[in-house]
Image: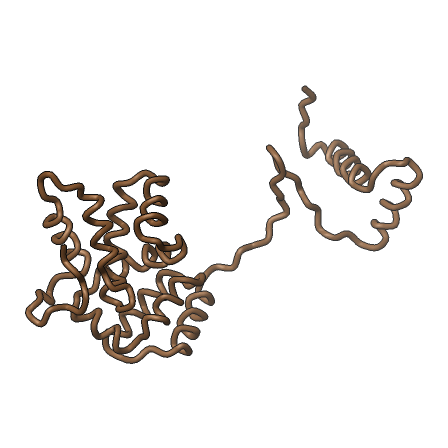
Length: 223
């Protein structure tokens, strides 16, 4: 069993965390041993309160999630690890990103960006691109809360704005929500609704269908 703490001084700093963990998993895969149990035990002994430990746990969780069925994975977290799913999800979100860094780079990031800040990045709705950018920046300089906010805003400003749609999905189909109409047209709808004892929606639908029929813009097939 390898108890992961701080990286050894003589470690291979050129390997990424993902490569190191893959090597570790190969070492754990011994004849007569249950690899899943060995990986779970490795996670238990790994210190998640340091960034390197969190990065390695994330890689090991990726392995478990890939090998286990959803129920088995949840059981492994709940019974063997005693962690809440939210913490595991944070580590899983960070895993593909942290896994690309070397041990030496992780040590630099740890100096320039607190672990609490890293977890906070993974907790919220921070885009993966922003997390990557902040971790890369932390390899060479300190990253502040303001830096994260600025980078997040820059990312959001670049994203195309979603155009509102008049369609709303309900049940097995969808409904069309018409735009607002003028006061004059609204008064007509109210009057017709009251005189005919029909809901406003029925009046508007009938008016649209009659108009379409009049201009012959739409061909309706009656089943």
